[in-house]
Length: 539
Image (cartoon, rainbow, N blue to C red):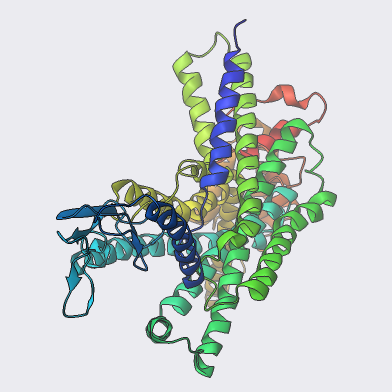
């Protein structure tokens, strides 16, 4: 029996997503001192068990196997050099190198006379500690820091402007734009929390204190001073808030996906009464699991600043975030499937296949920033060493798209929105008209005349001409408008705005991103009147 292609595709996709769950790591995927000690103790115990088994079989004058505190050395043949791969349980080692020892002709390991210890060559393992390697790493990290700083700064400015626009114009107040405002706010909080975290963690004073504390850890087990403790408390609060806003950002992306998906399949979330449910999902759920993580971390691993990983505790907040990304990706695929089917049905035989694919690609690209599809690209790939080319490609990709996602979302769903553009043009016209009337009133007062005839400004003329270009349906309104201007120079009818500009209720939205219809969804109106207008506006 043949296996359906769709079934194979679904199985492969599930395998990729399951592998993502195992490979997903957070940006602070490093080892704490406690984790490193635990791995060393575990390696030591394993080594000692192996040594005990080997000693029973050694009968000649071979060098005996031993644990030197870092590596488990096997037995060595006399007058032979022994090489062992650099252990992968030492995080900062070069895991592609080898360590070396020399077994003398007498069956003893060569000694380093100056320090009276067994000689061993760890040069290849310590390549990452060389000044050249450190300089290269600093160059890479400085470039990444500059990239995401510029990206988040541009996104922050764009998002603040977008929130102000959607909040200022009352005709833009509707469920869809309320959700957009919450999403924009989550991007703003994420960007601000990243900047604050960088200032707290990597400012000169705190950085030097943290380095000194790390040196003290190797010299002696001594507690931090009162000043260091206060810095650590602030650091823990900042890291916790950063994780919370990171989670809320992912969950508001999920809310956007759920809202758009519901418009196509259920259409009940467009009701303003359900907005509070979406707010709980976006702001409330992340607060729950981040609070649980903070409580567990404070109880079981309250060491230094919480910016470093603490073993499996990170899964407390990473699993919910991963779940949100996966659900949103499935929603994205399902919506693209519906759009593609509607596109083929609507334009069957009318458009060239290349034009149909171009329209589908256009819709896909518009939806990708909103659904955070770029998170899926490297999700199944674990981080590797900094020197690796693949790691640098991955980090540059993530820093670029993560930091600029807010800008793209604000640009597509606010600045390119036809309703927003109409409201801005209307506000600009009102301001120009008010200034024009004020100037003419001043000129009339100076001339001692109350006559206004024929004083149509450039702003009012150009706007009236734009209205005239809308078609014969607006001719009567234009005549009323012009006659009103002629008879009452300082009067603007209250019905002007409502006659010429549609408000933004949930059931009356007709424009798309950048003012173009992406896909004809007329079939979706059978059960929900005016639904395709809402969908076209969202898309």
